[in-house]
Length: 345
Ligand code: PEP
Ligand code: MN
Image: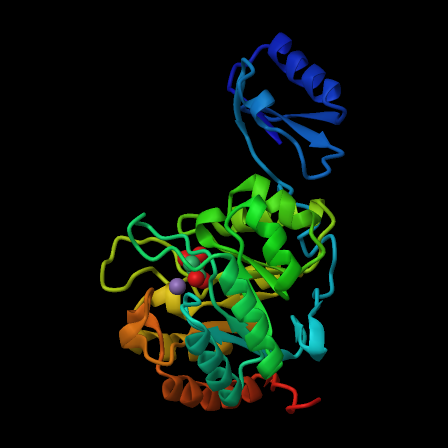
C-alpha cells in the first residue's frame, strides 16, 4: 500500500498509479480525509518497493503482504517434513538431535565423537570441514580430507552427516557427501551460495545470520525454494545483542514465530546461541519445550583440547544426560526424540 503525503497533487497520484500499472499490477486509489493511499493489487510477493518510495508525493510504502512467498504458511498450510536417509525426518512428530564437534580435527576425534553422540541418541553427526572463523589465524578446518573422515564416520555409525559449505565451489564437494548442507550464519545472505544450494538436490540447513531479522531469514530460505529446493531446515543460533554475558542472545522466540509464519521446520543451536558450556544444557531443554524440530549441539570427546569452540562444546557425558532430559520434555509436548536406527539396520 502506497501512502501519499498530505497535500500530494493529482499529478503525483496519477504518476504513482501509472508506475504501478507499468510494473504489471493494478492500482486502487483510496481517498481518505487527510491523505490518499493507493493499494497495489496482484502482488505476487516480489514487488520492488524502491521504485515507488522515491516518487514525488509518496510518504511511505507499507508492505501488507509478506515479501516472501513459497516459504509462507499462506503458500503451504501443512508443515514441510524434510525426509533424510535412514527414515530420519525433520518437521514431523520427531525431534532430532544433531551433535558433534565444531570442526573435524582428526580421524580419531571424529570417529570417537560419532560413536559417543550416537550412543547418547543423536541421529545426525555435525562437524565442519571448512570453518568460517573471525580471525584468519584461527584453525580454518581440514578441508576436503575432513569430508572423507565424515564419510567414514557415517559408514561406521550409520549417522547422517551435516557439514557446512562456505562457498559455491566447496558446495559441490559437500553436496556429494553430506546428507545435509549447512549454510552458516555468516553466509545467510551470500546469495550466490544460496542459489547454488537451491540448485543442489540435497537438504539444506540454513542458519540465521547473527544480525538478521526473522523476515530476512525467511527471505534467504525463499532463495532456496525459488531455485527448486524445498528440503530446507532453518536454524536459530543466536543474534548479536549488547550484553557480553553470553556469546549471543539465543532468540528462542524465533521458534514459535517461524512456525507461525512458515511451514519450514526450525531447529535450535544453543551452542553458538550461548557460547558457554553450562548454558547450553538449559537452553537446549528450553528449545525443545519451545517446539524446536531439533537441536544442534557441539560435543567433543575432549573439549579442553578442541581446535575450535571448545568452551561451548559439551563433554560426551553431559550430552548423554541432556538427551535423557529432552526425551522427557519432548514427551510432555506430544513429541518424541528420534532414535538412531539399531546397528546393522
Ligand atoms: C557452526 O555450526 O559450526 C557454525 C560456524 O555456526 P554459525 O554459522 O551459526 O556461527
Ligand atoms: Mn562452532
